[in-house]
Length: 410
Image (cartoon, rainbow, N blue to C red):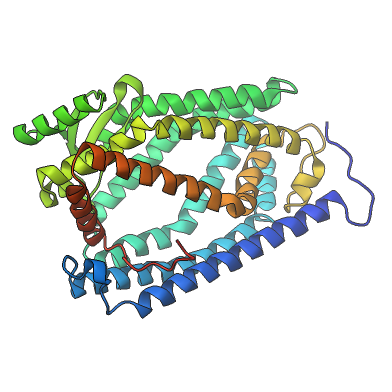
């Protein structure tokens, strides 16, 4: 049952509208201000390599990093403005309401209509974002020599991503929508349990079944490097299901290494581009940094934090989904005659919450910085500080990351 709206002058509906608009506008202003500071600061220091790096980073590499950073930041400003307009279009300007009413007219109320609304929203949103994605990949990344993806490969990835989204996304969406309608007052608790179980399942199946759809993985064949890496992991008390090399060079010139999976399904994955650029000692140092995250239980902490925040989110959604003003305040007219509004509530919640949570993002950034420093310290203790420093500099140069970011932006 919906709670009746207050009859005061500033109704809950209008209060939400004002709060949402204010959060969107203020967030946009802050993001523009930060990005503008970053652009000016990086441009100001473009032609001077910081003294600490003058012997290792060339002026050309430093200039390229500055140009890459500025180009991405400027394009990011356009995406920010465009994204805000799209968000307003979906919410206060009535886009989501119009789409919902159209699907109700075609399909009537029920699970099919709700799933169709989620799918239509995802497809339309993807098409809206498509030009920006293509420009980012085939113009910006291409201009700076990072893009290795062909149009055929990009299209294949897009089709496979869509297939994975349908096969995985629709069942979990249907389950949550069913729980919202059938599990009673505390549906959100059951939905949270289902969502967490789904996330843990994905962590386990992703390395074996999903990732190989997009990249080729082969066992690490360099015997000497394999022995070094195995000895490092044994020394750190870390066990993995295997050491693999991924064909990253087919899509990007960027280099990386990462752990994937959960529990017994953990894998260590090296980009082939990383192995081509780093010495064995530097690979050790990069891997030791990642092992540091596990040693300090950062991964577990992040999972627990995700569990806690998602529980709060589901509980909040459980309450908001029963308030008429939640819908009307965000530009949607809910059905008051018995047809479910659950898909509407999900979409509105996913669009509205980030506008408010943005303002606490510095807290999560601070935690992330603390974790990175701890992982660095662990890598230095287990390997060589000189190797870690050299590896990080190579990765900075390889990824064209600026060495002179704006302090406030950071």
